[in-house]
Structure formats: structure tokens, C-alpha cells
Figure: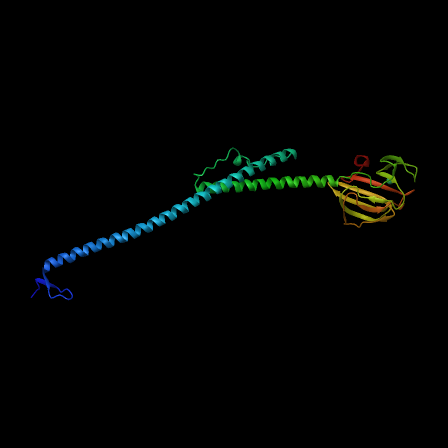
Length: 289
Ligand SMILES: [Zn+2]
């Protein structure tokens, strides 16, 4: 037997009046269904509200993050612009130095990539930014190559200047110059391949250019001799010394004391026989004093 009706009894505390309600099963079912729908709806609304609140918080977080990133991008762009300005200045200086040094223009169009006004705006995408950074990296490499070339050139120039004999090897007076002369020993005309500079025995003899000592020993005729290789085809000879202060293989710089004046070898008095050779050929020291 199925139930058709339900009876609800309400008994208030301390009262004898009992209230009763009769509700049909179908009505009760409908009421319960109604309550369920309302509760479900309310639950759904609550969930929706919570979700939207969370979404709002997430949106705000993302907006803040986005703003920060835009600021960072802008400062990156500004930094890149500064770098580009620096690069342009360097390129200009580089070009000037190359003109001064009489060097050719850089092999590639290093200047082309960095001419003109700044071309970056904040709407540039990260990809464009990356492209610019790559371009700058190439520019820097080219600039470095150019600088190294200039440095090498200057270094060569300096060594060349240092290698060229200059000045007197000893404080004294010229007693015999370069050229044909009557030999003081045989009386015959003979080529004199250097300068004879008279000075007291013991007076210091100095290297007239940077180089490496290739000989520091007694040689027939020259007596105690120092020969210095300077590079760039230059070689100098200092003969008739009384003492040698350097050894073969030793590096010397211009003005360095290498020997003491003497009268060794084929010599008629205390003096230095000074020779300058260019590519093995004795040349007039006059050009190098
Ligand atoms: Zn001589």
C-alpha cells in the first residue's frame, strides 16, 4: 500500500494545542523539488561569484604584471638606444682614426647598420628587439676587428720608429765620416763604411735604436764589437770598444749602455766605429744622427 498523505504534527513547548497539517505526497514531492532547485541555483551562484572574484584578482595581477613588463621593455628599448648612440660615436671616432692612420675603410658596411636617428619605438615586438640586439652584436664584432687592426698598425708604427737608428752612439767628435778615404793603415783609397767618433776610453756607448744584440765579441779589425739587429732591415755596428756590457741575444732599447769606448782591433786611437746597415748594405749614418 503506497502512502498518499503525510501528516505533520506541531507541538509547541508547554502547550496542549497540537497543530496538524496534512500534505499530499505529490505536494510534498513538489515542495522538495522546488527547494532542491532553489538550493542548486543558489549554490551555482555562489560558485560563480567566487570564480569571478578569483578571475578579477587574476586579471588585476596580470594587468600589473603587464604594466611592469611594458616598463621593463621601455627601459630595455631606452638602454638599446643609448648603446646605439655609443656605437655611432665609436664608429665616427673609428672612421677619423682610420683616416689619420691612412687605413682603408672597414671591410664591411659597419657604419650602415647604425646610421640615422633611433628607429626603435615601444611598439616593437620582442622579436624586433632581438633582431636589433643581433645587429648590434655584429656591429660590435666589426668594430672590435677594426680596433684591433688600428692597434696593430699603431704597434707596427711604434716598433718601426723604435727600430730606426737615431742620434749619436757616443758623446764625442767625428774624426772620419762615411765614404772613400785614404786608409790610415795602407795609405790606399778605401771605402769607410761608417762614422769614426773619437772619445775618451771608457766613455759609455749607447744603442741608437731598440733591438736585439746579435754579436758581442772580438772580431778581427773591429776589435770588441757589438752588433744590434733592429728589425725593418736595420742593423748597427759599434766597434773598437774596451768593454762590452751586453751579450748576444739580449734585448736593448735606444739609449741603453752597451759598451765602453776603447782602442781594440784595427784602430789608431780611442774611438767608436759606428755603422748603420740597411738590408745588409752600409749607409751613411748622417741620415740617422
Ligand atoms: Zn771606422
